[in-house]
Length: 77
Image 1: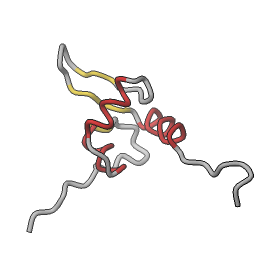
Image 2: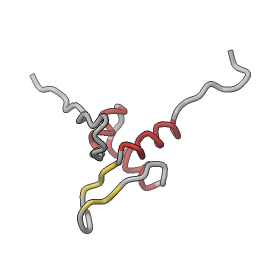
Image 3: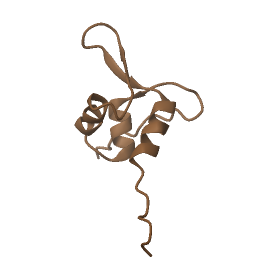
Image 4: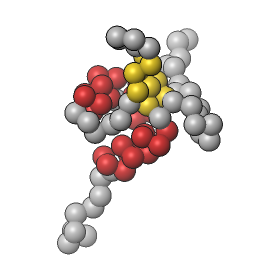
């Protein structure tokens, strides 16, 4: 039986997330995360030169989640 890779648990340790971890956490394709990084909706770090690894800090992920949160419309019940 093959199991899907679960996102690493970084709760409380401040270590950055991999794009694949954030995508798995949100149940979206990694390209969705890369698009939001390119659009400036999600801050990320590039570690290394040229095409280095992309990492997302926990605080930046929290900010992104607040940005994309779906809120109920006013006046709707």
